[in-house]
Image (tube, rainbow, N blue to C red; front, side, top):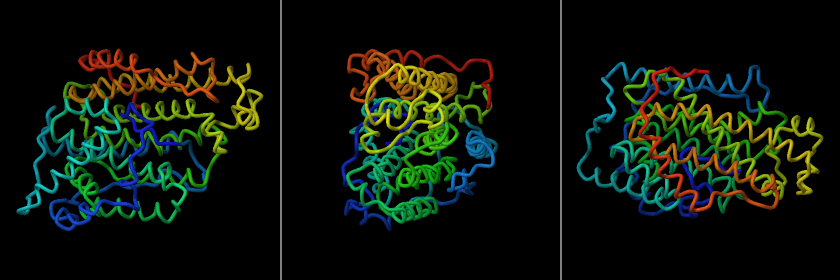
Length: 399
């Protein structure tokens, strides 16, 4: 199950194997040592394990995840106290050694090229952002794509837990100013300039580990945690870059919680869209207890037949996903004005996938729900119009 990158509206694309862990571009390796000189690892990173790997949770997944939300929000508040934050944040560059600035710019340009190729609509929206924010979002996008490729890309069958451990070690190195390659260097520079906690990145890697060892989810609490790992994390990574509008009255943690909600909604939508595809791989990303309550089992899913019981079950699942989209909507309006368009586009287009599942009479076994190109074209100006609406005066509910 691919991670749903929270801002991405073309989730089906895959990166070429040249961006995978085991096949890195030679020129990126060559520039590594010089790039390390301009990447700072100054951040005092807050780290916390979200869940016990065994799956035995003392409290609900939502509360465990919300603890990470609070820590990321606190990191942002700390930065805001140390400097006056305006909508177009002026990020002071580090002292750059001669000959290295061009390499770092090249690293960011490469991230932009990848984003433009695999997430065209999202990339278009990023062009409205300030240059520093735009480059940082590209760097985060590429890291998430590369991470997803480890378990869903062309070399996925060869990925082991040890390979993910090595990927996590690389993450820690780039946070400490020691990037391995050009693309790592762009993210390393980003996290040195913006208050982005390392924990959501580590949690996404945990989501990849979960995909290697787990193919069933007993209840929604377990599924929620998985959705957070592979998609909700992206919201927590991105909001510090997107920025919160200066005129927003919403508590910082509530904006992060809304971004988390969009990630959960997107991933639930992915799961509902891909039921048939996942079933053919022997995977069921649906709450087992709720299937049983509807009189269904894995065997019914593997039979790939739409029944009245299935329609009833799907209606409840779609209703839940829409609830998370509703939760996310008010949070989007709280973002910096230049950052809202790509997020609104993602929300509107992903939400339409649920409409398409309904239009297919809930046949997500043999029909893949997708938003047609004309509908995407219509959605973009609507998303832009929504992006112009300023934050509401009322506060968001923070949990």
